[in-house]
Image 1 (tube, rainbow, N blue to C red):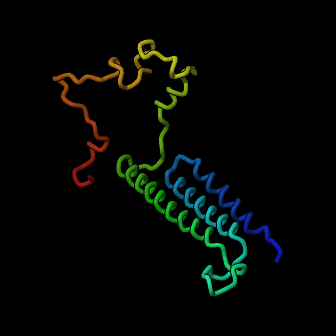
Image 2 (cartoon, rainbow, N blue to C red):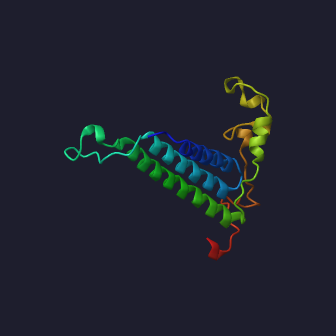
Image 3 (tube, rainbow, N blue to C red):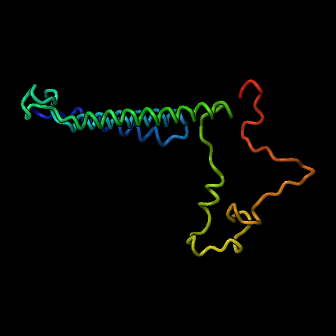
Length: 166
C-alpha cells in the first residue's frame, strides 16, 4: 500500500484554518477555530495509529493483525476535551451577547497600559515609588473609598439589565 499525501494536506489545512480563526476577536470565530483544531488533532491521531486492523481482542485474531487501541482512546479523550471547552466558549458567547449585544472582544486598556510600562523586574519594584495608577490593587493609595453621601458602587456588570433579562 502506498502512502497518500491527501490526509496530511487535509490535516495541515484544518490546523491552518483553525489557527487563523483563533486569532480573530470574534468569539464565534474563536469557537469555530477551536473546533477545527480539535478535528485536525483527531485526524492526526487517527493517521498516527497506522493502517486499519482487526479488533484488539485476544483470541479473535493474531496479535500482529490487531489494531492499536491507544490512538482510539486518545481520540475519545480529545473529543471529550473539545466538547467541554466548546461548551465553555459557547457560554461565554451567550453571556457576552446578553450583556453588550455583541460577541467581539474589545481592546483592554489596562493591558495596553501595563504593556507600555518600562521593563523592570517585579522584585525591584517598590509600590511606594510607583505612580498611583500603577500601584497594585492591595496598596493603600489604590483602594477606592466610598463616601457615605454617594452610596455603594454598582459591583455587578449586569445591574442595568431589565428584570426579565436576568
